[in-house]
Amino acid sequence: MNLQTLQRCLTSNSPYPVTTGGVRDAAVMVLIQAYHGVWHFVLIARSHRLELHAGETAFPGGRRDSEDRTPEDTAVREVAEEIGVPAQTMKILGTLPLIMTLGSGFTVYPVVAVLDPDFDGFIPNPDEVDSVFRVPISMFDTHPVVLGPEHYFLRGYRIDGRVIWGATGKIIRKFLDCVSSSPGA
Image 1: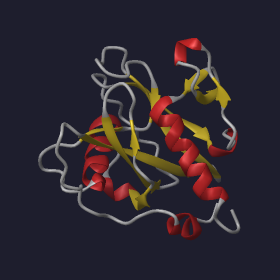
Image 2: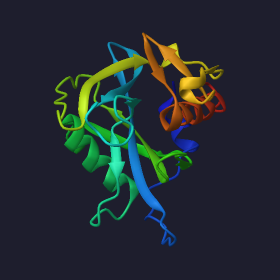
Image 3: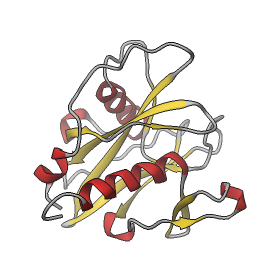
Image 4: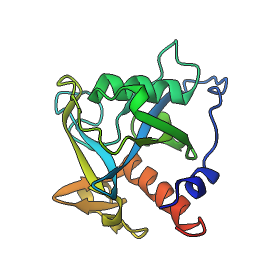
């Protein structure tokens, strides 16, 4: 995967837009890591004790705080809070197009960052995260499966016994579309 080419289909750091009407902003960190020379997504299993999206597989992230000026601010803060990744261990490449969540009503900004290949010091916050794990990007393809009625017949992925769907599935598809549309991908 060519990072310079990937970066061309991402937008740069911009402030959150001024919105009205109950829009709730959030950001996730799409962490990619060349772990043992193979590109991986860093994902979390959300705590089963959470009110929203409990137990789901996701990218680390969360809602915008009042001091967050940009989606990047939110994503960097959240990845540190949820899994203990310091800002200096990653390089932000840009942001994928935003998505809307169906049930919880969030506008989610997916921020893409490269994590240092040697970083292995994840510290899951037990109030928010059950586990942190890596999945090789090559395990995903651009043709997700249609999931059963328990997932509203939406498209998603079944990887290593985990179901990855909803906002996270959409973000992965956007990332893969970006990579596959890039020359030399």
